[in-house]
Image 1 (cartoon, rainbow, N blue to C red):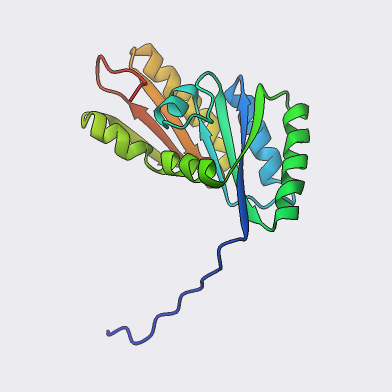
Image 2 (image 1 turned 90 degrees about the vertical axis):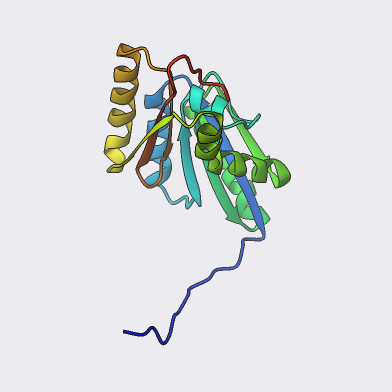
Length: 183
């Protein structure tokens, strides 16, 4: 057949955008916060989860290299962004986050460029890096990452993990022997 017509549904970019970064001591705390956000009236544009090694590899100064980072992107009018900031700040205190921060403008663009470029930077640094990508139900994201890290520790493999926490796509990066979680 010949394609004679193609329709695209496009949405304009929101007038304002921001990302909110929660830092947690444990994977469980980060996942519980993610669950609260997913099952709420909030409508984030993206949710990203990184372990401490993944945060270091992301090359973004605003991510904590010692904690699990949950990054929540939102876009809307300025008043709505301010409301998200108030609500998420309250949530961070309720969930006893180690830290909570808001990034905007150029810092926000740099954050997402760093997150999107993580795999490319790893491959560029060492082509022997193995990447395990798995699409899971949201409820299985935590157990998968925890088990992958447990196996990597058992075999003393340097590793990092990240996930698209709103869609259930998890990545485990197994770094080459002698490698480190630094790029």
